Length: 84
Picture 1 (cartoon, one colour):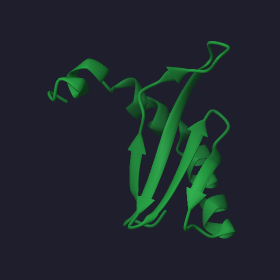
Picture 2: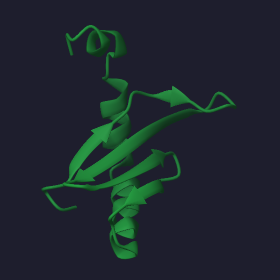
Picture 3: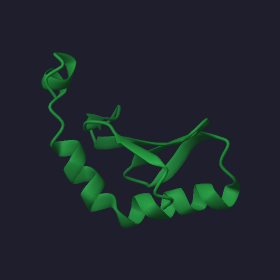
């Protein structure tokens, strides 16, 4: 992945069936893409080529364990209160 692309990971949420999921956002200047784990699929994007979207999806799949680990460490209340 291009080192200039910013990666933002959500805390773990749950879908309508109660299954855990994590949202991932990639930002590069004015370009952005949002994906979700599990599935490692880009749900929406603006400014990335089809090839770049495929590479972002491959990155999410390859780094799934580290992304999920990061999501588990997010303390929502601390972030909300400005302590995180």
